[in-house]
Image 1: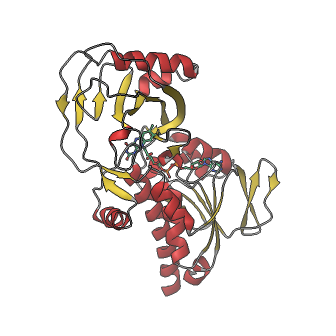
Image 2 (image 1 turned 180 degrees about the horizontal axis):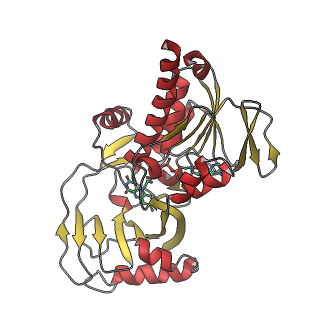
Length: 336
Ligand SMILES: Cc1cc2nc3c(=O)[nH]c(=O)nc-3n(C[C@H](O)[C@H](O)[C@H](O)COP(=O)(O)OP(=O)(O)OC[C@H]3O[C@@H](n4cnc5c(N)ncnc54)[C@H](O)[C@@H]3O)c2cc1C
């Protein structure tokens, strides 16, 4: 069975961190992997917003706790894809209270944008973008994938799903694993990206905020390799974003800029450029403890931060764990 998986045709849905790490590991072991993503490029929630001013509007930075993840981070640093972010990060308990330095830790960012590692991982893979997978059906021991335009010609021997849980459940339809995905819930996040020509009167680079519509703000321009020093990202809190999920981008922009102004000691100038983005599925509310799910009989696996933990490292852990489980399973079978 090891050689079967090693030579198997594997479809991976989702080119975020989990999907790319899983796909790379399987390909390194000899699987013939095709990755599908509905987006314009890889990275998922580690995307960098394109436009006149590029922005990290999803994941802001990441930390490394697992030595195995740290080893990959070190390789990315050596390749110039990642750098520590020596930012002054503070905690604000409520508007009007003093900012206190947050717990010191090494925070990493990709360079020049948060999508850099994903792009590097994807460069060695057969990645098909702008392709939404809408269904997956088992036909004679293979998986056939449906898209909005019809069923793909290629059959696959194994299927890996790394989209957020409700999208994974929709693809799986009546398969029993869909129930597990349906039970996982995600919180949304509104992101506002604003650029000023000059420095704002805020004596920090980033802040965790409480008692406000905002939960986080960061001067994107303080990260290494970013060309606009006074570009800021504002994130609405999960509760506020949920309550304003269907608000217009203009209304959200106004509200989150007003929340930012409430943190400043003097009125803020009008930004020269501002946009908003809604992440409907931003962060998992509760993660599965198993890191990933692998149904060896049907050859279908699930991974993502909603399995491995609500951060970049959780997605990496989950994607890697699934690849290992798929390959270990085949090793065990081979030696049985
Ligand atoms: C606003 C925000 C801030 C965050 N801040 C941080 C942070 O500071 N630090 C941190 O560690 N983490 C942060 N995170 C979380 C981190 O971004 C995620 O945990 C991680 O990137 C998830 O990776 P993933 O591969 O599991 O999922 P994703 O990155 O979501 O990848 C899933 C992919 O599946 C694709 N897809 C979905 N449905 C389909 C379909 N039907 N067909 C084809 N493709 C499909 C999507 O386009 C996407 O590319 C943040 C997330 C958000 C949204």
